[in-house]
Image 1 (tube, rainbow, N blue to C red):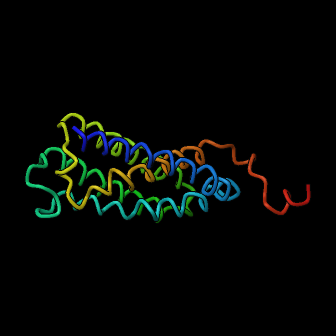
Image 2: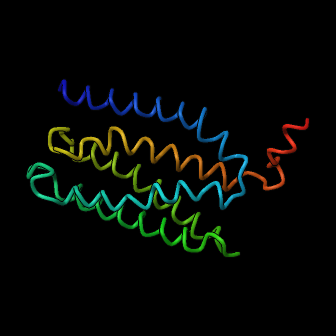
Image 3: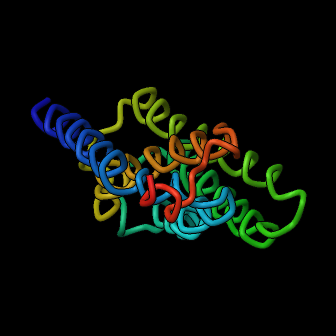
Length: 169
């Protein structure tokens, strides 16, 4: 029971810290950019989600890790990485909004589903082995960046004030 409490505390602290980093460092830099320039670094970050496949590697995770959990998490991350690469490839096209939205919705739902599935299978943090860092450190960062992409995609483009104009005012 203690390991589950420590797991939850670790995840909660990670959300708080990544939320503060997003608010103080990421958002101020991203809001000044065009939509394509703002989402580009986030898409590159999420292109690394193929690392979720490590949940399927024996010896990296415990044999006790439920296969239903491992498969959903691994393949959901792989799909999201592919969608991030597709969105990057189409970033300068007039149709770029569709793959960005698809990536962001699928990716955010995938991460939320992973937490849900972990709860559903009564995930023991010890089953995660070397992948422990993914739900405790990486997933909170990824969810914070999904929120940033939603903000970027929903903001009015005319509301963006170029840096040169702000320094004059």
